[in-house]
Length: 238
Image 1 (tube, rainbow, N blue to C red):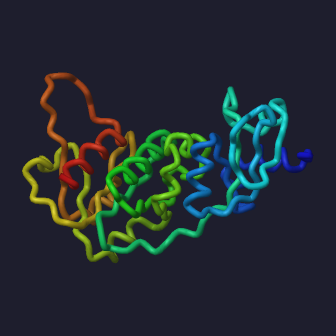
Image 2 (cartoon, one colour):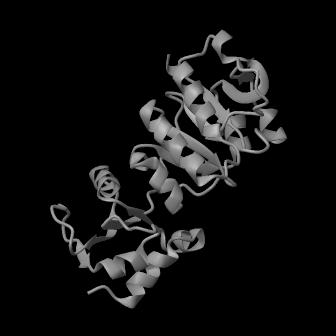
């Protein structure tokens, strides 16, 4: 039987301060929960709608649709909700490319970028302290389970870029075309804030300014940061 305190805890975990306080986060959906379990993340609690059939988890708590709706962040819950312990980030090594985000604020953008890192085999994603929390429910929905396979580390971005031995590439509107670059086998790709791009402090630590050339004769001001990341990672891996 789920208690009122359990329901209150899950609801509170929608807010970052409670996720930090308890060291827990919530994901929803059978596929995402399964991927996190398979990746070895430690579950705190698994809740399954009692009418769901064929959900194969060890010791889930069966709850009513009404209770699950109270706990869920979704307008229409999808039957499975998991509470997990927040994993300790791994050290960021320089064995491959690293994506670094400078104050990316939109949850959908961060979730998509985590998924892109998973797709392109980027093991580490470095985020500035003012980037949106990767355990935000909207971020987790957008990752589609990729959060289990990408190491997301929050740190002082400037300090990290000063210390790394890798070449640092930054995405700028006025940078040199990425299609004319001979990209190395490893480096750091810095992507900036949705409205302001890479900050002045961080831009001073970029060793190569690159851009995606515009071919259309439109008045489009810039590409969405997640879209730009996809194009640049494709070119890096190509």
